[in-house]
Length: 119
Image 1: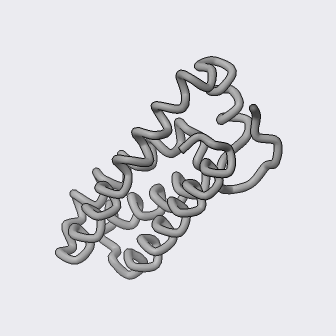
Image 2: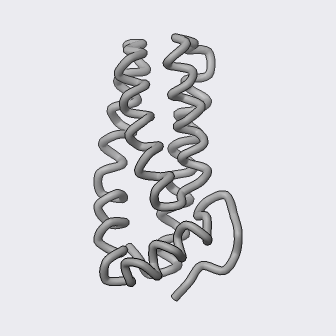
Image 3: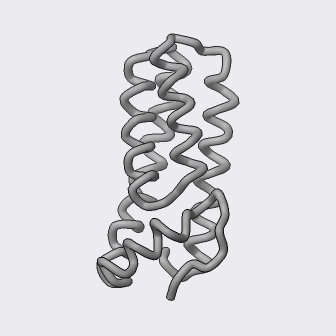
């Protein structure tokens, strides 16, 4: 199994490199852990945004970004990078839009991974 199409949801180069290195049996549990834990992180972002806890927003967005980037989840990583930058600047104007984009990207990732029978 490999991803062949290039999209902003899952970067096939990164994903296929991981798949080649780890094999499906090695990659699948990592992806499943990400899918299981990310909703809690997104929920934390909701809480932090509601209270304008800029430092916590930065830390949580950075954490999600790192995991998403390492797994090839490009759009999610990009939205988290934008949120992280906004939090660094304590610029809350785009928090809601970015959080919505993060939720959408996460759902698109789950859909794509489900199509690949990885979750």
